[in-house]
Image (cartoon, one colour):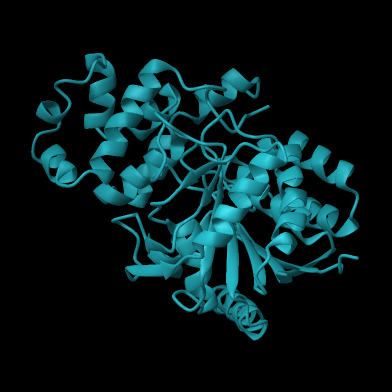
Length: 105
Length: 276
């Protein structure tokens, strides 16, 4: 069965990714600093280059698979004005992975 | 002593304000009218306070400190916290002393809520008030339950909280007229491959079980089937808290699956049972 959440308790990488998304949309000037230079903004984060790339590239599906909080993903989409169709398509693109994990496919 | 004069529940979604045109004009008018009528009904009850049971969507609370339950105990709340929400910035009046009373009573009764004296409330509180036409007109006490980041409090615990509120609200010494408004759900999935899925069968089953009045069956259903209804459906905890707080009979006001808004849109009220 497909479950509502990726992890029963968040993992450290998921925390670090969620932290970046949270800060971008809750701290003054953070959104502007992030948009100006995402790599510079994330330089001090302990995340691997692969996970930083997922954030920088707006790879919503990859972030979902890592367990980033889905409400933060939604806020990120609306806050960065990522087109709704792109947002949904990025999630649909990983549906087969989730279904396989759930025994649906 | 305080009196509970009305208990209601509604769905909420930021899409109502950000992308209202994502559904047909006929549906939109129908839903907005249902909210407006609920607002008229609630206003007619002349509540001194509306206790709003909702969830914080990872704005006031983050994974570094995320309470299962939190009671607001101050006299004003800014809203909305989301810089992207298409809503007027407001300051809602709060009833700090009722919030403080509920906090203390909860601790005395074996519940362990967090409290906050500085919440900037999000769309979960604001959108139903805006659509009901009562934003800025009512004084609020927010009670926030974690529905957004596992591990979550159980459905059973949400109902227990509601039953606690049923007694505690009526034990408040001031002659207040108190309404309760729960907001959240029904089925929806946020930022998952199922986004856009609305599970009408789950929603109608949940509403039917609220009306049936068998708490054990209601909790079993919510617990066993919420994964079929999406991560946003975890917000039915707010409806369970309202159900416990009312201690009366649930009546559906409106329901329609609205995949264009990613959400099953429901509104309901409880017929109150007078306490002896």
